[in-house]
Image (cartoon, rainbow, N blue to C red; front, side, top):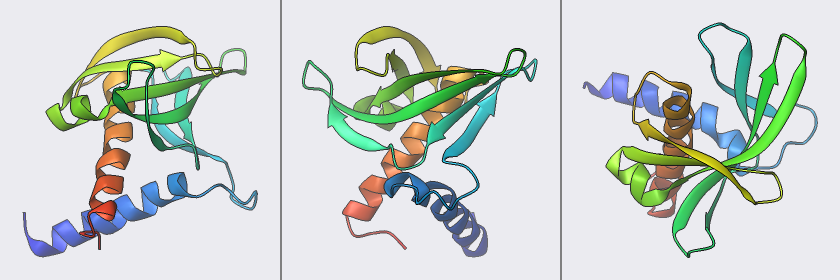
Length: 143
């Protein structure tokens, strides 16, 4: 990949992911960042700005977590959950995405593969991209 393309991709990633690290001020158009939609275009999946965190689950495993929103356009209903991927699964590029109720109780989990063609993979790709960006920033190698 040439240097110009790498620079453009890095700038695009920075502009896309930066809002997850700071709480929204209420002046942005939306407090949610679009991730993906289903193939029927009836459900939209988004992550809340400022909700990204690296933490541990109940078993002590390090995880990357965001607050998620699913908008069902048919009835204009909104559902909220916490979505997480273990940081080791992010590094491997495959594993489980775990869905929690907003209070942190387990709801369900499903498989993902990096760059896969399903909703779970799209959400996991997003979470893992933010995790890798955060990790790079902390290592002092960010742009």
